[in-house]
Image (cartoon, rainbow, N blue to C red; front, side, top):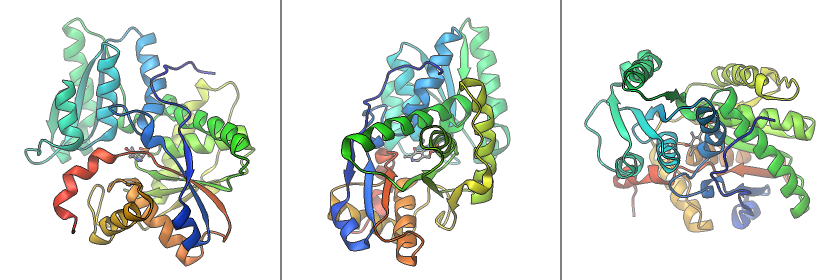
Length: 326
Ligand SMILES: *Cc1c(COP(=O)(O)O)cnc(C)c1O
């Protein structure tokens, strides 16, 4: 198996959402991957343990990555990189002068080198722009390693492949068998990794359900297949998961990536009051909102044991505070 760094607090806790489970008739457990750390919290650190290991193996001293202005991934990359004595260059998308808050604020506090680009450039040229930055940085005598958006590539996906092995151990300890694992899908690496881990550690017995927060289900099934293909070279044996065996539920993107509808924010507030757990507006809030809607529609079986992965993102809520009503 591919080696990795040890940066995060593992295993992350599994806890039951008692009230929501009782009200919905479905047993909903949370895996607290929002508690993998503080500066390096969230799902990205599972992937980065592998990506940054590879960067260091390759003799790199600089990490370059990209994301939205409130990117959890970029913040985690910068924090992890700087902790390891590396430089972090973040290419972030914003069409206006960004408010200094949430993840972007933390990026600056940590001392990341932030380069802001337009959404057009981000969509069309971000890979090229990161390569240009790498060329400049390398010319100055550094060696840079580029991590793609969300660390969602073959090596990054190993983070959630191994998370499934962790879940297997926890099932034994807790005496529970989860029928289904649920997660938000933003760039596909988490979902792809969960599918691979399911094939390897559970004979594909669990249903892996994703809720996409941008693009659509077809896009992410195809993307996940590509990521799984890319991951093969890091695995001891071949793992195949086909698009038709993937379950990604579309319909909860709302008004767009990182944009919130009032009902989504109300849902976040309602669940926070009920369970003392805060979901983020960009990923987990939308996925959880989607899941509760689907449970109401009957998509999930009564009495099912569901493990929802709280992938983090708390810092992102601060940039939305004016949209909350009290
Ligand atoms: C990035 C992110 C996701 C989505 O994970 P992907 O691997 O990009 O699909 C979910 N939740 C949070 C909080 C994230 O930051």
